[in-house]
Image: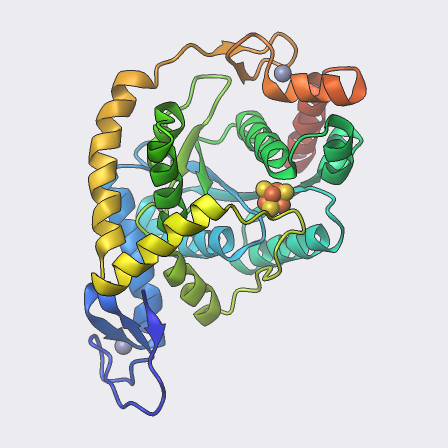
Length: 335
Ligand code: SF4
Ligand code: ZN
Ligand code: ZN
């Protein structure tokens, strides 16, 4: 894991004659601020190019939570967009209505988009379905995070489809991805595990391709990148955040292995990617049918969002949500 070099040590940057401020153990590099920022951006660039993740992608929607990961990704893409041949990078944020936490998240997203000159869409959940996340949690009596995850997945996909972008980029980093994969493996939840690949292909008209462009980026590097780029992200945790002891133990084990073998996580992520890709191409083509209410992907004919909103309010709110998003997009385009 990268760390700051104490100012008491006179260490030169490996790329120029300036004083190094960051040590990158997995690459055996000492870097100054400028070269560290460039190094992180070039690692993301190389990963994208090597896997051909943005082949044929002209417009990209970045899902923004307001945290360090997604906002750093937005800044990295802003630096790389010409080299990657991207014509448009948009940001999208769903305001969940979780009090002060949501207010701070929204402000952080808007400021970041303004700083990188990206068109930003922020939409409140309460404007779409008439309820905030805490209200929905009470109405349907489901754990907040599973509800929130489902709603965000639905919203981001729907927004991408209506905006007509070529792909969506999510802010998941390597540390989180490895924890998810190892947990799924231990529980033998191979279908869930198979979703942890860098690219999930889209389905014309109903699902936009999802990309994990930070698949080989350490969380610790995003923290340092955000700090050195002076990105104002939300540092406080969501009040619903639940510390899963299973995941925390896996994370601790991975951190310990990385400590004694710098680069361990990276090589594990690369090996897993190779094997998962084979599994995915053989198994991911499961049947997806459009929801009979809103037309979004479902496995049973009614999508999870329409099922949930029907339970909470008595009517499936997919169609009205879709109409509202259509109007937001139309308004932004000026017609
Ligand atoms: Fe949503 Fe849970 Fe994250 Fe809060 S902690 S934003 S409820 S997923
Ligand atoms: Zn330097
Ligand atoms: Zn639906």
